Length: 638
Image 1: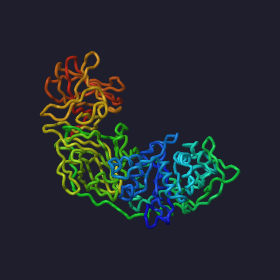
Image 2: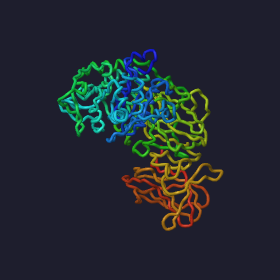
Image 3: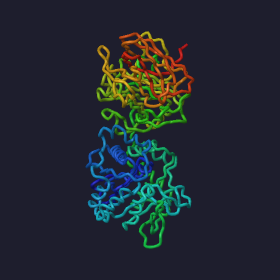
Image 4: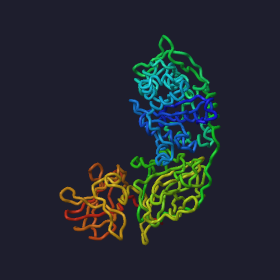
């Protein structure tokens, strides 16, 4: 349980050293430390690849469950070292990249490094502090080496690591355990230190599994603590957690249903924890009553806090027809490639349940509302959120088209963040079909702030974060998100069947958001924002080479539309290229010295891909392009 002055004297002060963000049992252990009245969590240190991200993850976890962020209100969280063995953070990185952590709405990591925080707390809690190491022993070894006197003040070190008689499956086959083999020199130093060690090896943890029924019981509490654990579980890459680390935390106060034996263990060059003859240096857990432990764990953690659920969204709207060919496409995401994966702010890739013809969709996961001003910060929603970097400006008639599959609710809340105004607006749609893939389209100018203020989305207003929210107890899949301007008057072309790529140059930098060869230039009035201007290429040609940030599949029927202005000769060539080689080419005769719009159809087999678009104009010409759209044509409605 977090610090409470009236009870602090009755609790054991613990510091948890964790590699949270890799396996989910670290989060489950952190939850147990918060929910247990026998201990007081006085500090957290992080270890592993990207320990700073792991520290921010812990900071957000503690803030979310308490609603607090001031250093004096929460245990300090310190950044530690990186072991020699690399282990990247998986999908759980989304939890760290939430706006709450990005924009300074949570506790911040402490200034001192992990080993210094260990020393500081060892001095403060002289002879009482228990260090619970549930990751590689990099930080603990450094603490012992650089602060030996303070290390002697630690009551004991509880280490989740090693394998004496069994492996990860609980069968008799000792093997190098992950936390030990990640940093073998550090483990050797800790086990040889002579300090009091309690070791919780695979022998006592490998069979302690949080199976489906237990998970459902735990998550059904719907408290801010269980929401956080469930959020990180859903972002994890596996199905059934093993409670390695919670067992180590429980061992601090005898809540582990454990059997112990005094032994002498040494770490060999392969990372094995080898029993040796001689004076015991460890108290080693050798067995556990697994089912009793799981039942006890679930009951304890789910009892911390009260149930909290979101209210029904307001600002009701209805689905609309997507209309004809868009006047402009701002953003498109089909989730079929990893090109824009860095912009997936919330959601997890789904490959089994996809709409016909699709490759992947995005499954909603738990999150706190991105709207920290008027959103409900005391509960969680389930959401898919896409961040369209670099934040496009809108037009006067913005629409959002998407495919969805709902289970357990008929309502979706659609939300946008305004970079221009610094607040969120949303609309909600109810009465949606459930249990099958369906198409949706909404008029984004109908969005308002939660209190009804904010006015409509307006032309030239820059936006960010396209957000789909549902009740946290329901399920949602999202695919083929297209943010666009409604068709211009007189438009006859059908809505595209697929958007391959769009480039508009209004915001973002050449070479970063818009890779390629060209110059980004401001439009002259009455036109607004920016366009791409040609530069000198081979053989004195004028070229605009627009990189598509990665290779994109092309359909047999692929077209390109572009707004243009050409000074000089009246024809340009347009090539689709893959790794520097031309896969398709078209030619377009252009009107000179004025802005116009044209299109080119490419002849393809449907097996090609492209990673860039090349516009070529003759020597002496100057070419300007804007609103590039590569797409698969739609079919005429009968």
